[in-house]
Length: 323
Image (cartoon, rainbow, N blue to C red; front, side, top):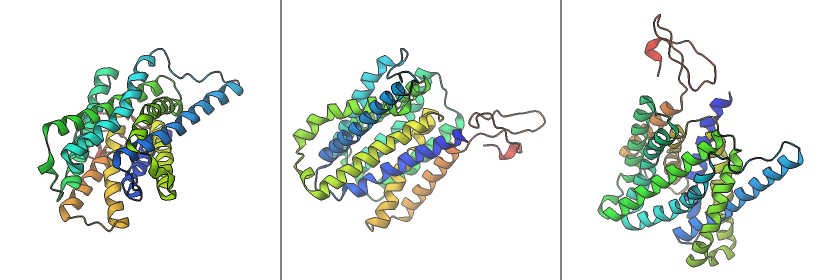
């Protein structure tokens, strides 16, 4: 049952991330300042929770919860930089190439880079089913975000490169977090180290982009929601999901974010989705469902497929119905 909760936690994180765009429209801040405030507040919250977890473990006699084991110490500092760098590269890419293409390239390349890095660093070779489902999800995301946007006219090489760099940075800190959690570190502490450190790095960005909008009640409430819910709570769920879900699968599941954002745009902002966009939404959903489903054991008299996601459970099915 615990292994099945991993994908649910990851989708829950993606749902929270998907609300950020709609809620962000309530603030008068610029996009970079808003992202900086979100990371500073959320990272501070995660850092404080990590310290509380550490001290509670010491008081209860369970020993010290390791902040960085020997096998994972060295990548944590670069991963902190990657968390902050992702925000800066993403918004720089959007500024050069437009929201649609910048989002598709950054989010679409993230799962691909994650699968590659998890293979190279962790020797976790992604399955063929993951590759097909991820391709479908990325294609659906591309159709959903770019249809009717006219974003292709704003694309340029530098913008695409920055978006790809953002996707690579996301993949790097996701793989580092997954390896740290797999090595025995508490997931909340891993997220606290990464995002608490990134919050410190983003403080100058917030100061330079003008934090005066935080003095207004609407701006402050928006920033608190973005920091506490879409960063703090979302990354606690993300870390929990990484405990039992391969990081390549996790990266694909988080593509639910643009689907949630699109649906909220229709419901809350009265935006319109074309039939092509709805088709992209369906394709994206199908890809997520396929990658989230656990592998089942199938008996055909000669063949048995090992269930790698069922944590020891085996289900009987016909060979034709096995994923």
